[in-house]
Length: 398
Ligand SMILES: [Zn+2]
Image 1: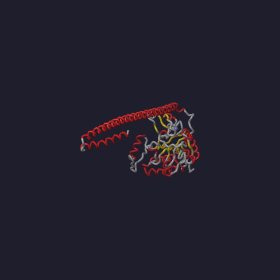
Image 2: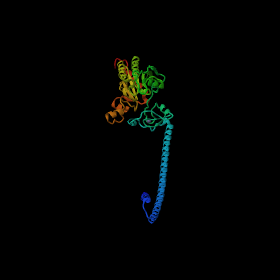
Image 3: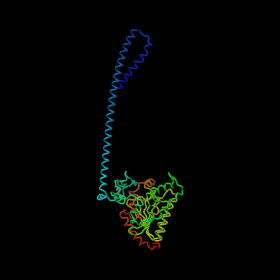
Image 4: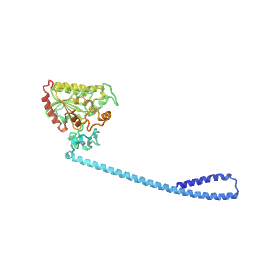
């Protein structure tokens, strides 16, 4: 086709100057007429060639258009088929999950061993709620769990035994004998001494959190009983600004130590924390020294303390009161560390060992004394309290 077109344009080009020349040319009539008839013939031929080329071009264009349309149609059909396939697969998965959930907590036979999972890297720890709030996705194994089943299981995944982070109030309910909890120093509230502002001022942030949660700080302090044994209890609440330690948390831990010494009661601490509260700057870091000093004082007075590290316990809390109690326990799979694994890996430019900063890894390295599952926790604490009473009571620096 292009050949034809070039021939055509060549013909036209060859023709045009002749036509342009014609009026100026001095010519004999005969010669003129001959040339005219010749020109006519040539023009006719050119006309014919042009028509043919145009017809060919139109044909080719129509053919190309039809082909493109057919191709587009084919692609559309393919995409539709793909989408249908995907939707079908999703529906199948959803149906399977629903059926599994229907079977409920009774499913215990094919539960994998917790040890097998413990070494698996768990990068996502954030609780993901599915629409409607009735279902949760396990962060460790991805299983969709009916929320009521999870609550019945003390927030432990029925499929892989992953221990979800427990909010303060639920923890108190879980650990203490029913109706024995008596809260203390609940009115202590953070002060924005540094006038700290990031997106909003610290005072405003604190006020909003209090309003939303209905309690005033990240640590619940009180007294209660565990299997009939009276204790002083401190529970860090991850819900309140990531369980971060500011002045109030430090003060409450110190008050707990003093109370335990005064009443000769064991002190039980539960931690889940992102570390020191940076909104309070140096004042939050000072709580590390303060809480350690308070626990040392309790120890010198013959007191007994147990700390249970739960997922996640990090930063200044790990580096202070969470690590200096008489007994250090941890929940299975709990992330326990100072700096986060990513920060360490980047700083060292090294790959971190498998299971790094997990309770199981730290047990092997001797940082914690035992890993206790949620189901065993009350029993274990009761036994430890009995042991502590025999070993420490009477004081005078054991
Ligand atoms: Zn799970």
